[in-house]
Amino acid sequence: MYELSDELVQLGLQRIKGFPVDGFVRSRGAQNPALMLVGEAPGENEIETGVPFTGRAGKELMASLGSIGLEREDVYITSAVRSRPYKWGSKKERDGSLTERKYNRAPTKKEIIAHAPILDAEINDLNPPLIVTLGNIGLQRLIGPQAKVTQLHGVLLETPILKWDEENQRFMETEQHYHLFPTFHPASVFYNPPVRALKDEDWLKLGELLRTRG
Ligand code: URA
Image 1 (tube, protein in one colour):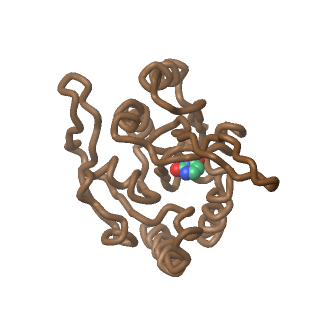
Image 2 (tube, rainbow, N blue to C red; image 1 turned 135 degrees about the horizontal axis):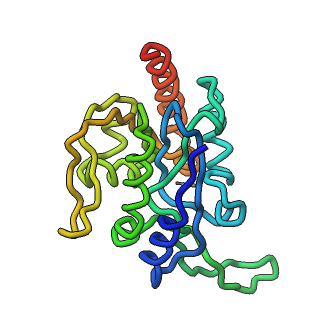
């Protein structure tokens, strides 16, 4: 079992201080994972459970993993940001009144930079044989903002990835090349149902890849 060190957790908490985010999902997973999954950021559910992908998107993700014979314990699940980015909004109650509540939102570039050393350390420590990015946030964090999941999904890339260089305050490409397989974020099928067929096809390809690579 691999788990983040207390030092990294403290660093993550310290670097994200002052941003509109809640909590911190520590994440843990296989020490020698078949793959590393890189999502976006935890949502409300995950902050409650302390476990990544335990909400509605998580159910969807577990079904995809199951479709290729894998379970949560076989993989390592992480994300670009480890705290829940939120925004305030109003919710209409049944009686018509409005109440203020927090809504999940995508992380900003600054929040992604704040937690970049955590993902860098996980990749460094685990050296995963295959990194599967879920959605644009995870993909762009690792290969840059020009990358689009709609163009790159379902394709195995062999590529340098981006690591945060604190001294120069910028992302730098690694010398090492990694195997990266971009696919859609599991939640994308909820707001864009036609994506489901593409996503399911990607997972079948991924299963095939794992079988042929041994
Ligand atoms: N989206 C993510 O990227 N991670 C989670 O844990 C849940 C939703």
